[in-house]
Length: 66
Image (cartoon, rainbow, N blue to C red; front, side, top):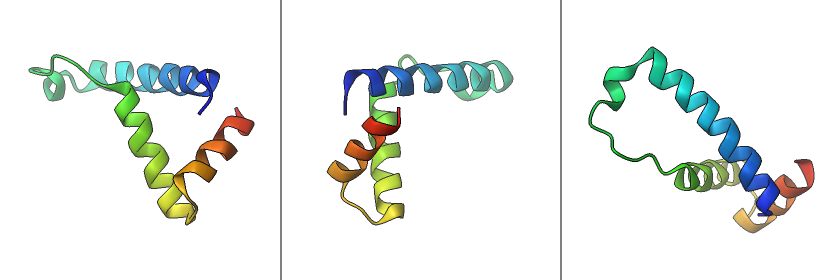
């Protein structure tokens, strides 16, 4: 995955996490750290599984669409 794709995904996830934390702060009370990189990896894996393509192929496709 290219650095720009990771950066864009990270930005988007942080925006949505911030909105989620504002609306449901109790869910994040004792959470010290949120690993956005791991969230992106899981999302990519799930999408690759859903689309029935390899994770590597999905990351190549994703890098061209960003």
